[in-house]
Image (cartoon, rainbow, N blue to C red; front, side, top):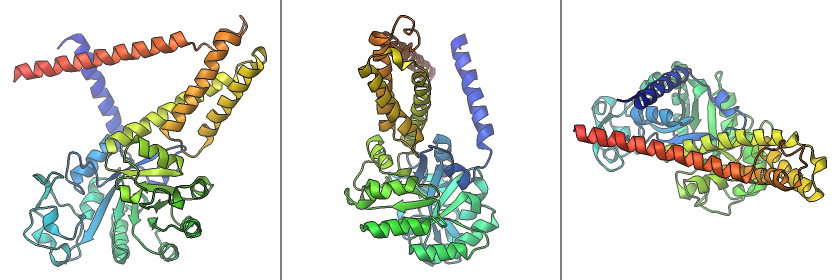
Length: 404
């Protein structure tokens, strides 16, 4: 191994070590949701690309990939053991000989193995909720449950001192949810669900649930449903209101929008700041890009605001003012999509570039030091670095192949 490869290996080891240290600290649901401008990435049933859904392995892997929360389905066996399972029909997801969960005791299931998405039998086993709560202390969970089981499940969550990092999600009238939450000494985190198409009911649902819920899920298969309009969406960004969750993993639940950047952009721009996905790796990359774009935009705004616009033509100064206004609107918003942030960055950079190239005096030319040539040079340097990384990766793969 040459020096360069050793350096990369050492750097990678240090990064993993640092990440592991930070990930050991538990984050509560409240702390996660109060991070300013944060898009919350929810992994639906865990990392199902690599592990069976609802398995402990899938949950832990999703967290490592970058999920802020993981949603799982919880079902009760005949002997009242809470297990992670999506379907009442046991044979649909594991190699058990029994038929239905509610008619089967845990002892008959504890050694059964789970199927992955392709139907292949894996070494992963069915896991109980207590085991998950014990082994995922730094993970915020969303538990999909039956409304009839809410008291029992909440009791188990309390027993394991996990109420501050667990959300219970079930379908029930918003007023009944508020009444139930307020009846508990330890207040459970609840995600209310609204799937109607009447704007007054939707707004009423927000108002009711905002009393006790920090997240409200809206779902519809209708692309033009009123909940996707600004009249409803704007209410989610109001002070003290709940965040809106979009179940993007199923087109029938998010107005036929795709579970990718295109769909996420539109959902976020419609007021949804919590995105639930089957594609957690891509969403984690998306949210990371949004964070970097916001950071870059903040730097551009600061530089532009320090420029002396009096030396520029009226047209150029007006263009800069408009670009600055748009940029500040994005920075002050609850959350922004990658699409909106890219647009704001581009417009502000273009306005600054034009001033630097044509309208500034000699004394001002160094003030906004962003030119077309520098942009092209930066792109070329980035491409060269990427090409180098790809080359090193291919060489390493070739060496490993030869060793075999």
